[in-house]
Length: 352
Image 1 (cartoon, rainbow, N blue to C red):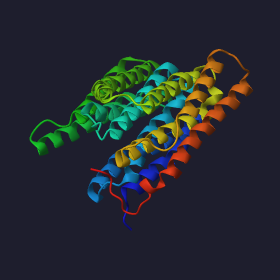
Image 2: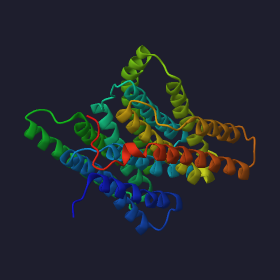
Image 3: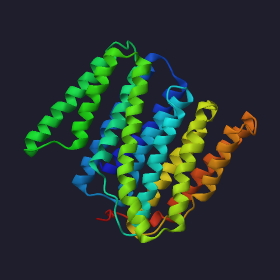
């Protein structure tokens, strides 16, 4: 039976709820090892479905599923850490503002029949996020923790060997993301020999967020100028507000209200998926998806104001958070239904 890139991507997405459950429920150590193994496989298969897509030819559905799977991987693993107080809410919020904002810019450029090319910094950011979460996980949950620096050093050596192999094959320098990933693991391993596990975990996350915004600034500078030169549209503005509202009003709220974590996961997952629909429709049809981000943006602001301002009790805040999750999921499903001709036409290749 022929395995397609889209099938691999769907399998990755279906494995993510188990990882989120493990980080929320914190079962016995053997289950945490299983979760770590599943996470490694999910991260590794990101390269498998990319290789299959290049070999079999990209599809419009694949152009939606693959980036969404990457973003959901980060969301479903980080939000439980914020809820348990093991990851700063403001830093996780900054990371998701960047992800949603770049998604919005990518759509705005595609509507104008321009492309936002993935840079070497962007690829390095993805490698650092996935590798950083694995290192973070090892630092916090896997015992004995004495193994952690050795495992991280092994990852650094493995990536270095791969980088050398690629360099020999190319007869030149390896890709920046591969070389940078090897250096990241080496830095984490060296730091872990001297730092306590929680201190190492904190600095790992700071590296992730810092590099995420360095690559984001690179995209913002180039894409922002091109969009302004072409003239702003109403949808450009609403999508910028959308990205800021969910990252600033919702994610940091989990610091003070960890019980909202499942509603936040549903909401943010749906918004990231909506962004993927928006990207794919814009690339295929040069227009925004036929749905609206306004209701969920307003709901995110309401939840944030009520939560940060202590304007309602916990049950009411939970009700509002689930209302936001419903609005986010509804907008995503509505967009998929209205744009189904874009994604589900048989054997439809992706543009370009």
